[in-house]
Every structure is written in C-alpha cells, then in structure tokens.
Image 1 (cartoon, one colour):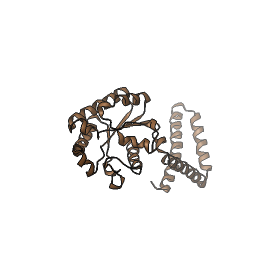
Image 2 (cartoon, helix red, strand yellow; image 1 turned 90 degrees about the vertical axis):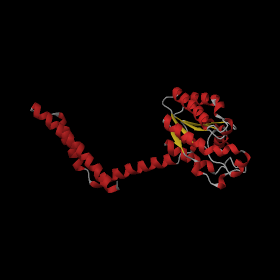
Image 3 (cartoon, one colour; image 1 turned 45 degrees about the vertical axis):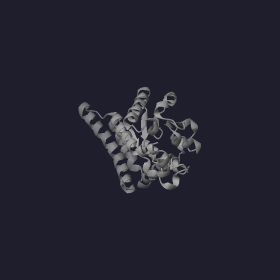
Image 4 (tube, one colour; image 1 turned 60 degrees about the horizontal axis):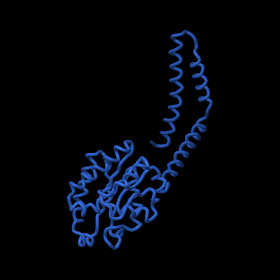
Length: 251
C-alpha cells in the first residue's frame, strides 16, 4: 500500500472507531430512553478528532512509519549469533565450519568431524537439554559410506532422529538441509559420493513425510568456495549458507 493510501486508511480507521462507539451508544439510548455515558464519550472523542489538524495526524503517521523502519533495520542487522539465540545446528564437519570460521558460537553448533547418523545420540541429547525453539540438521556426507550407498537405510535412520527430537521437544521447529555436492576430485577418491543426489531425494521425501522443512543449499555452491579436498568449504561460503537457513526459519 502506498504511503498516501496508508495515511487515508489510518484516518478512516480513527473516524470509523468513533462512529462505531457512537452507534453502539445510540442503540443503548434507544432501549433505555436516556443518554448513556458511552454517547457522551463518543461525542467527546469526535470533538477531539475534529480539533486535530491534518498535519498533526500526518506527523503521527510519519513517526509511526519511522519507528517501524528503525525496528526493521535493527532486526535485519542482527548478527548470526543473535539470530540463532533460540536455535542450534547439528551436523558433520561441514556444519562444524560455522564454529571454526566463527560465524556462530560453538554453543550453537553441535557438530563433529566424520560423524554419521548412527553416532548422533550424544548430540541429540545435548540439543534436547538446551530446549531450543528451532533445530537445524545437516548430515549425510559420511552416511554415504557408512550405509554403503543405501539411501533407504539412511532415510529411516534420519526419521528416527527427527521423531526423537519431536517427541522430546514438541514445540520445536525442525529444519533439514540437503547434502552439499562435492567436486570431481573428491568423487575420484571416494566413488560412493556419487550417490549424493540419491540421498538428497531421500531427504526431500523424508521431510515431506514427516512434515518438516527441507532447506535446499546445493544451489549456493560454486567452484571458488571449495577447499582443496573438494568436499569442504571456505569461510566465504558460510554466510550464504546461514542466510539461506535464516530465511527458511524466519530467524
């Protein structure tokens, strides 16, 4: 809505509120035969409104708009740690990068290098103990080898984790990120990584079945973000990854 339209709508709302008050009072008067207190109050409000000049009303609108703009700017300029104040991220070495590059405090990142889903219990319990409002899960790279490329087994293990979290934290919102791709050099050294997209399909299906949000992050990756091993990422990638999560979860 344009500013002039907003101003007009606000003024109309003020007048409408007074009119409703007066109409209600008149209805009561018709039943009692006496002028009620509500009618007197309504007349007084209408008198005050008529005494206010248009510039005064416009100034109040400007003040309100400025407050809203300042609040929005303040919200947008919060640090990642401020945005994650009621959230935690669980994952593997790639997720651990958020703490290593000091994008997030270690207390917000419950991750371990080389971890697969079968090893997550201590981290799940710790997350439950923190009682967060939002949890992000970022697993899968190490499960490709641990599950021998069996995406169905991976999917059911992931389902168990989601259900355990949901049972312990029924009001917590759960988000699952897709598995980030790797470079060809990593595939040459570890052929099982060729199943990443198959596992991602399992992640997407699981999220639909369990009614949790799947966050797609693979499209954020470009060649310049990779570390020499072709699997991990430089610091420059993590702000992009974080903003995608923050947008999905409305942090």
